[in-house]
Amino acid sequence: MSDEIIEELWQIKDSIAREHDYDIESLVTHLQTDQHERQHWRNKKENH
Image (tube, rainbow, N blue to C red; front, side, top):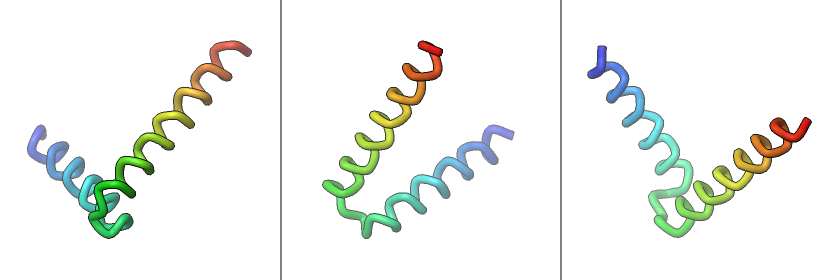
C-alpha cells in the first residue's frame, strides 16, 4: 500500500514540475502562493 501512495505522490510532483517546465523559480513561486492561499483559507474558516 505505501508503494502506491509513494507512486501517487511522485506522479503529482512530476505533474506540477512539468506544468512549470521544471523551472525551480516558477515552482517555488507556485508553491509559496499555494501555501499562502491555503493558510488564508484556513484562517478565514477558523474565524467564522
